[in-house]
Image (cartoon, rainbow, N blue to C red; front, top):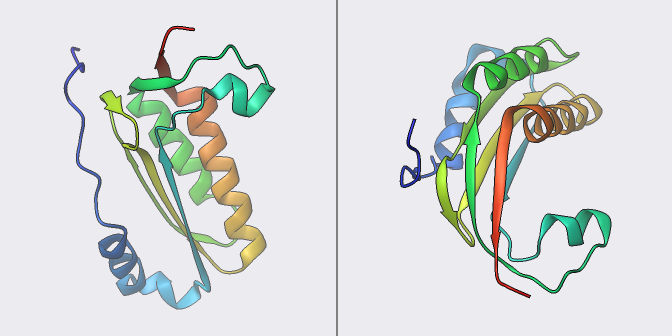
Length: 138
């Protein structure tokens, strides 16, 4: 599939929250957390591992496996106290500042919601997506 120029427009977090709060299960939810990952200029290796080769990110190619993402969402929905899970992923060639992903988690108490958000974002980032940073030359 050629996703080179298929960048998407991010959905409205306000609309997502309104929808979540109108769900019958919302009466069991005491907290919502949102993750909004964006393309940053600092390379992942520098931020995560302290490796600075002097380069800067100029863009990113981003792709995902929809079936793996669906499985990660289902696993998150089975976690204690979690009643609402919503995920949007961009794709194709992304520019600095573009949204990479949006994740919304709704649940009963803060520890459950934080754990679910951490689990889902980590699962997506480590097993479901391909991120190829384009960098400036050193």
